[in-house]
Image (cartoon, rainbow, N blue to C red; front, side):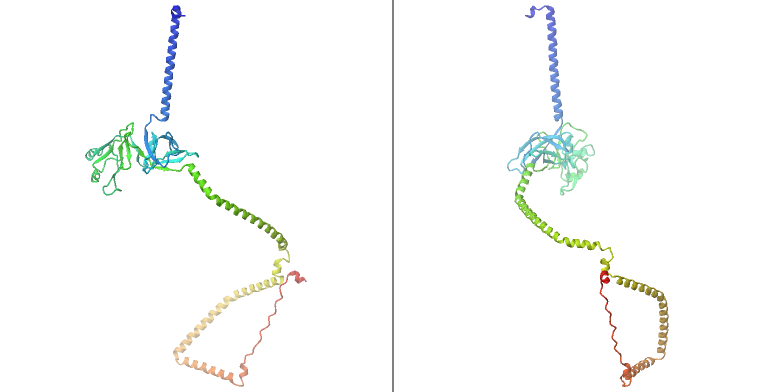
Amino acid sequence: MALQDLTPQLRTRLSRIEQAVGWFVMLALGLLAFGFVYYVYHTAERKGWFKIKAPYYTFADRATGLKVGDPVELMGFDVGQITRIDAQPPFDPFNVYVQFEIKEPYYGYLWTLGSRAKLTPADLLGKRVLEVTKGTAGYPTYLFHPLSEVSLAEARSLEGSRWLLAQDVYAANDSTHLIAEALKPLTNLTAIAAAGHTNLMVLDPIQTRKFITAVWNDKELRYDPFTPTNKPYWLHSDESPAVTERLEKIVSQVEHALPNILNLTNQLSQLLSGGVILASNLNLVAQSARPAVSNLAIATANLDHPGALGDWLLPTNTVRGIEATLGEARVTMAGVNTNLSTLVENLGRSLDNLANITSNLDQQVAANTNLVKAVSDTIIHADQFMQGLKSHWLLRSAFKSKDTNAPAISPQPPLRSPKAQDR
């Protein structure tokens, strides 16, 4: 049916329906576009497309287990991704060039001292992960403040202002003597001029840009202006061998050690067979020693009864004799203790008398000088007289000494056990 054949009421209603369908289609298209834009924005925000990314690079011995797009970790967080992996020229000292990006704010953890790139194994299939470490000292690798190179005269006009020095300055003749330190106020310009510097790198810490303005130069010890064509900052790498290489080394070591292990098992089998023979011999020895052990058990069981080993070693009469001797010794010691004081007192008196005699003798000798000679002559004559009497035939027998025999020692009876005494 043609549209002109419809009544005016139907044509009016149909046009309204067409308008509603058009608005619905337009609304659906708008919602679809909004959903697409929201998805793209959410994906970009999740992947950090709107965040500032600081480029870095490192070198590796091989690219095994690495590919472009792999995440970069810092303290367990995914802070960036690998953007480029290339082989170095044939005569270059390094093998593989690896470039990666660190998104904000994690590049603030990377400093010139302490920050390194580690290539560590991630699984048993050869996969490796790139991890960066937190800096400990030095300077930030990238800055976002305006950087300028000024002459020494211009630096004198900036001295005392908010501008900071953007480089390390050392003495001209001493590379270890630091005159001025980076990120410090502009001071000591006279010493800097004496060191031979005509231009200085300075920065304004008050202003902050939304993009990277400076990168640290390890060779020149200063900040250089950063542009997309500049080379990124170099993080030195610590590379660990892959797990597959470690397993291969272990397998090779096992192959080398396998013959020794087989020899060891043969020696162990020989040792076990010798142990079996030794155990059988010990069983025979134990069976032969069983009667002796039973007799020893019977002997030790009677040690606490009369007639035991103690009575064999010390008979009853010997014990009584020892007790009697100890009693007499106790009485003698008591008598000695009582008479010791009297003896000491008498000895003291005798010593006093002897002292008096010697003093009188000394006085007599001092008074009569011939007394000692007379006494000596008297003693000599007396000795001659006694020797003459001993040699006289009448008195010779009176001076003979009689030999006496020593009393015979009665033998002690042998020690016998109580049972033998009863017999």
